[in-house]
Length: 139
Image (cartoon, rainbow, N blue to C red; front, side):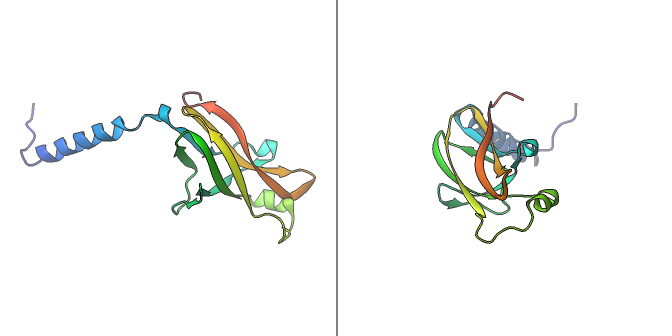
């Protein structure tokens, strides 16, 4: 067995301490997960950008997943349409809503998949929705 050089021991000890501290506070069951749904297009639900949470601007680049404390939250969203969706929607009326607000009550240990639900009668209209709710341990 080879001995670790003395100069590396403090570094390894510091790393081990940081690892223990990081995992101790990472109890996912005490928070809710809000994430962007990418699998809802067949139900006319498209991905979104999460721009603000409870009035606080999100850091750039925008993330697809947030860990939130249980309770009520207000999310400001912008719809993300791929080229095919843009072609189906046609030209967007400048008066059409470019942003939407989703009021959401989240529970600890749950994952909320969110998106932009397009109105099939009027492709320029969309509404922020929760596509589905899952237990955090579920796949």
